[in-house]
Image 1: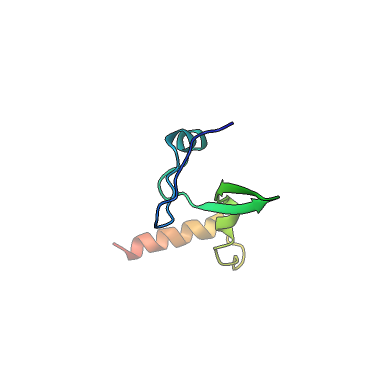
Image 2: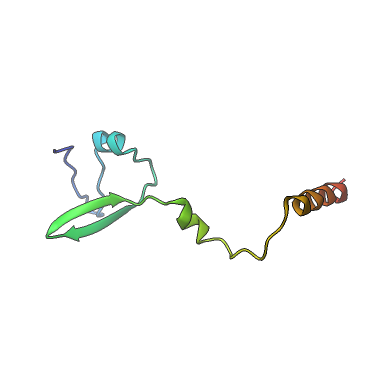
Length: 81
């Protein structure tokens, strides 16, 4: 199904037709992956998962109980007064 036509500008930019943006929930700043699949150009929006963000975090440094967290929060609140 054809969703629209775009033109490449002299700066190499392409506008995404409104029908495509609405159909796929594409917002300003959306990044795209360009692939060659059996001679066909396939453009996919880059979607991030929670696992992608989790890999950005440092590895956990041990287990902390809820009680220890409560004590640390209370201590911080007392110090910040």
